[in-house]
Length: 419
Image 1: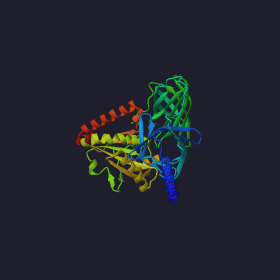
Image 2: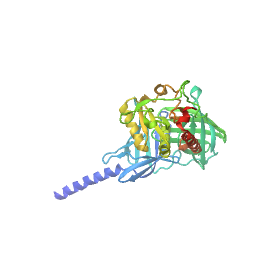
Image 3: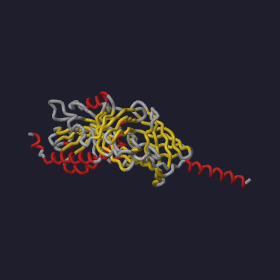
Image 4: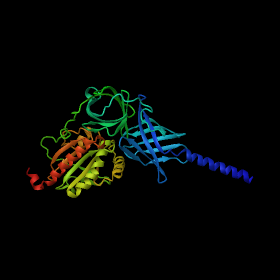
């Protein structure tokens, strides 16, 4: 009887250990793929590691490693929950053997969008396991049009190709498509990106070394547009400082919004008097805004002691204070933001944003950055942000922006008032 009890106990313990082992993700490089409504894939790779007794992963997009620490692998059963650190999205998955299946869930203001997802371990390739040798090298600058008709967007493609591997991005007047990664196989181009906010795949036929045709751009679960491009080393976008301006008769902006604890903050507060002030128009849902915030944190550390203040105005998917507060606290903690982030109570709809700052002619896109001199006058308004995925464009922006800051800091407030 005693032997039988021991056998039963050992069997139960073995089952528990087996269940635990089965719910641990394999370490190493995985291939994940979202399946769009049209049946096409948005693939990406991620690296699973064991860190301090917990599992975490890093999503791979070109040179970026996007760390995700909120990974809940059940110790009993087969459920896996991955909560993205930004952009209000998550994965709800099942572990079937080594394979993960389930959904990526993007939480919007009034609904959730579910996109089917599957992932396999020990899979370092992204698009094709054994691709053809590239027929062309598409590295360089391209003039690209994404979409058709009135909705068409003129962009600049910037690509780098080493062997079959392709990286790069598209720059637009309102920002960039961040770190794209993929391959050239034969006469086909493949690029993709995923970071919890963006989920993109670009495909195209390489007609010759100067022409990309038959382009398809898949975004999220249901977005799909055509695109094409011509190689053009002189391709450029409109001046980012020319797209938004103050309405005639205005020299200043003003606002009063609540901070993350509900205290009302205004540009009239002493903290902003006689300072160069940078106003960020942003949203926690906006990946380009997060790139700008990452830069602005370091910028603030450098320039705040010299007389610069930064304040972020958040326009969320919902006007609900509590929901906005939760989203912005994630941003604050993710980037260790040392300056004020304010909850405007207006949504990210551009008409709503414009209503909150009626002295602006319009708000073209997120982020928008307003540069104010020591006298409180608006000197420039910059639309969009070319993030680190844009390479030289990013460096050029930093040099230009910091040169402008240095120039404004040399101006005496009393002289500025009489300019």
